[in-house]
Image 1: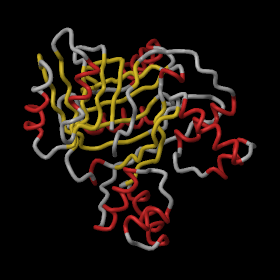
Image 2: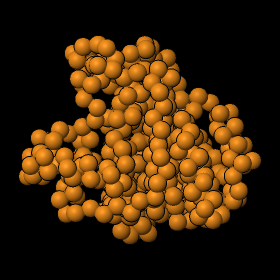
Image 3: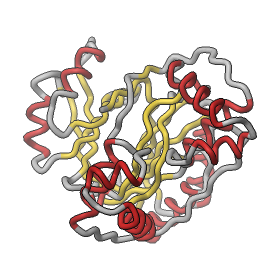
Length: 315
């Protein structure tokens, strides 16, 4: 996956979204490859109106880039979360641009927690990446975790469209050599047509369609979604790290998380903090209620670490 997002900050401001806008946004969050014709049918407006709405929402920076979520098990390089407690008085804008110049850094997320910076890094030698990161900022503390598995639930932003449920499954997808070219094309352009993918990969469209269906079935491709600016949609993003004891308990917690409309990404990690979830909520009290329910009803949860996102940058 690639985090093709513009820089965004936690500044909630009034963006007028009518019912059709909200439906369109939610549908694209649930499936960014949904065609204009299908969107027009679901919203009961013309195809030209759909195109105009998408363009207007992009100009308002509500709708951001589409994304292909793939299993970390089929990525070309290991994927890490690097959590850093930086020194005081850091220029986040300048640092973010410097960090994006480092090979493998794909997402930069700023939080108000004890670890105020989280980097998503694809790298074969994570310690080399850490050394390069240290050239641009003061590292007070660092927590390095490798992502070993991942799931995605389309966050439910607007009630005008029903929540799209996600079934919890553990998969071990395998891909063939031609699949890599298809995936790389979809990472660059998740809305690429079969013809466009065929031109890039020099394969027949029918073959592309068959391989994409197989990758979805195996779990290599998890979902196609569309980034949105959470704050312009009236949402806060809250990241929670869990320390959960035992595989059976971990599976039960993940299954519960994927049943929640507020859930976005769920990541399993090779660390004592072995689970991370990203919630899209109206307010932080909402997260408190979710965590209270988990603590009461699910055994094995040893600890939780809550962070509220204040800025995100990606490429």
